[in-house]
Image 1 (cartoon, helix red, strand yellow):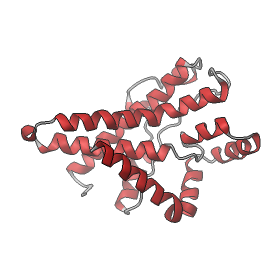
Image 2 (cartoon, one colour):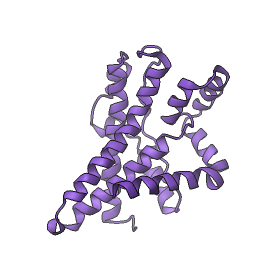
Image 3 (cartoon, one colour):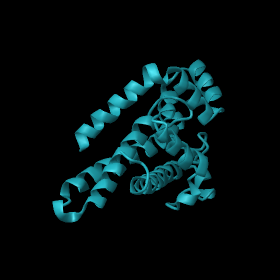
Length: 207
C-alpha cells in the first residue's frame, strides 16, 4: 500500500483516534480502580494532544513503515500508581489490558461496520475502515507482548515470581529503548514472525 498522499492521511487519522482512545481507557480504568493520578494529569480525555508524542507516536512509525519495518510507536505513558489501584498487581494488570483490549474492540466494531457498508457508499470510507482495522489489530498484538513497558508486561508481572518482577522493573526504566533493543536482537528471527502470524490470523477472522 502506498503510504503517501491519501493513505498517509488515513494512517495518521486512524493512529490519532486509536491511540487517543487506547490511552484514555488506561486512565479511565485506573480511575475506576481507585487511582486518580492519570485523572489529575488530564488523561481521561479524547483530546489527542494529551496523549500523543509527535516523535514516538507519529514520526517513528511513519519512518519505520517507509523503511519496510514493523511500525513501532509509543504514546505518552499514562501515569498511575500501582499501589493505589484495587486488587494490587491484578488491578495494575487490568489497567494494562484496558488499552489493547480497547483496540481489539475498535477493530471488531469497524469490521462489522465495513460489512454493513453498501457497495455504492464509496471507496474512501472503506479504505479508512480497512486502515483502522489493520492498525488497531497491530496495536493490540504489539501491546500484548510481555515486554516492559508494553501493556502485556503488566499481565505477566501480576503472575511472575518476585525475581522476574525485579528484572522486569529494571527493563521498564529504559522505556521504548528497551523495546527497540529487544526487537533488534530477537525480533527478525523470533518475534516478527509471531507478530505477523497473529496479525494475519485476527484479520482473517475480522475481514
